[in-house]
Length: 113
Length: 109
Image 1 (cartoon, chains in turn green, yellow):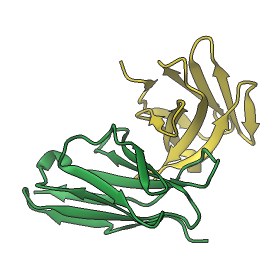
Image 2: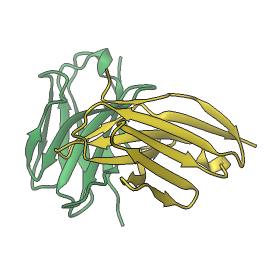
Image 3: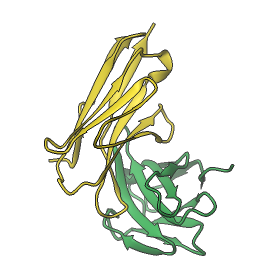
């Protein structure tokens, strides 16, 4: 079946511009997670959704980062006024109800020039 | 101190070798433990969960020592296709997973 999909797969933007990253979780998965991974670094947790609500936003690095999820499905991560340090791979994962395993999408590679 | 710590490696081993990775975690309230595998420029994928009694999946054996807050992964009879980064992952009382930075394994012919 279809896995987690993310778009765009690659994004190059100029410093100061806003970007929107999209995640389509696996159908029926209620939990959705955003992480980012900088070159040679581990995964950094950003935000987690259970349904449409976000019980844990503790990982968002600054108020330039926001995320929403509508209809318990698609989620968008928005980065306003991008900075060069925002360059990273942004990974989305989803989990079915009651399960601990997270299934990752292929990621969006963001480069801020 | 990081919540999950791993030796970054790389571990360079010949085919057929046995290799072990270790991981320590700082939060004693951690509830669940996993090993994920990440190939170069790919997303992480679950390799196996780690249970208190230890568990095995083919050539892979995972162990958990709650008293020492220590997790291990043993790979026997290494294959070229085992070359990847192995991520130690810990889950606390929320659904948030905490990832280690990974241990890189390179298996050579």
